[in-house]
Image (cartoon, rainbow, N blue to C red; front, top):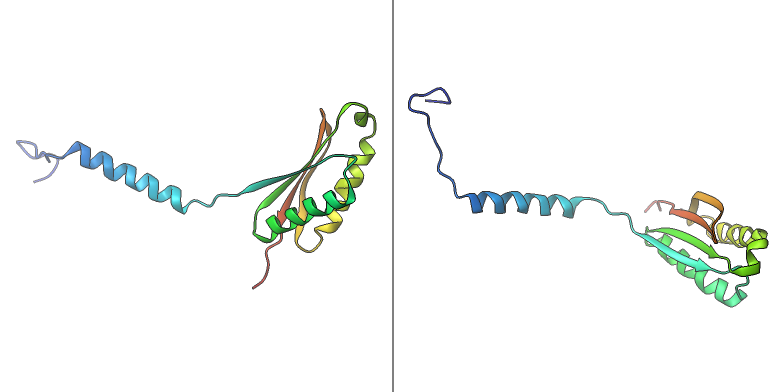
Length: 125
């Protein structure tokens, strides 16, 4: 027998079952795919020291959980003339996460905001 047999060999299949099996395989492969969580922490240039500490602690917690963190600084009105305030905050945050995370990317002023993406450092267990 085989593909060249006369008369040709045909398999009768339940199309609904075949379709279900294909979808099941897709779902299983999506479960195994590694997803990267990106958490965002937002600051303002004139942030209070206590608020800064709370947000920085939250970013550290996210990094310890193995998630990436996007640090965003929003500027409003006249604050746009003072981008060095945002740079100072980004520098403070990058110093605070020393040993837990590292800076992946850092951007200058884009529109009304400044961003920095932090990667967690793999902890050797």
